[in-house]
Length: 429
Image 1: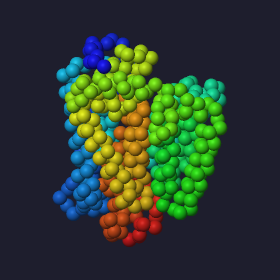
Image 2 (image 1 turned 120 degrees about the horizontal axis):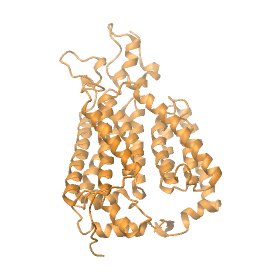
Image 3 (image 1 turned 180 degrees about the vertical axis):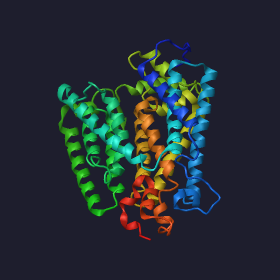
Image 4 (image 1 turned 30 degrees about the vertical axis):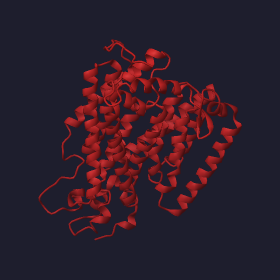
């Protein structure tokens, strides 16, 4: 297939999603520029560090600090590369929206990192729990009215993307926030009924980590039992419910490890975009170019439905490599912090790591990178993890309170109020 020529110009028609994305990005950037360096980040003062300073005493391991900065630098270089490539190739409406989503994720992460207060993470999770149950209720009504693969108030694919982010965020907080324990299971059930296969797989894999995020054996055992029961119900539904079985194993089939799986026509889109991307594999064609290639070929299919392929086509191997370096680096940093943090303090890091992992799975067959309702909460979760990684183990690393420190103050110094839930780790003066 030869090179496909297309006109590059800004159109006057702007969708509501594009307008909201641009508005949120502008607000996020303004908040970042006006953020005070002392807000949410422990001050580096010349006096002797105390537990009030969080990471001022060097609590955070140097290797993790380097990994975090290295990953963030890679994302900023990616954004600079994306802007330069897009300007050189020509701006489009789709390109501006895509760049706005990338900037929204990065700027939101840094804004929350600089401005987050101690208990904001718990407040945010409580809001997500309420939003999650509202989503379950509203899409449940759609399923009752319209049946399997309901396209009502929420499109099935949009519900699946939101379910992944919400489930990843609330799973680590199930023991600390009321209403969070059974929300991931409800989201998984409705994701299966929505017919969103990648989202269903992502939420199902996230449920495996329910037991890992619990430190008590009884809760781990209960989580394993619930997960086993859910797996059995899912297998029975996949095997014996005709609509679910048809969604997975009939239609446009591709072979995956010897099994025929329905690709819903994505294999044609991927072939179309990859062939055009191969004509400029290292530099790419600028933000939004993959979308225009697809829309010029098939008007009913607006996106490439593979964000990794989108990054390669738009920004070449250079842009794709920078994104993977930054994204995977932050995810690895959050995961390591979660594994090394004390009980309670690990929850924000688990939430960020699981959300990043879930979104990386959705990227295989979806367009999640250009959805503001996914990238905005993802940036918030990562920002909380980065803000708290320097002081997640303050309560256990700096010893018991001194005579000048009250137990009440010591409790408020812990991450988001989480570490104080394990009161045995805090000794009196």
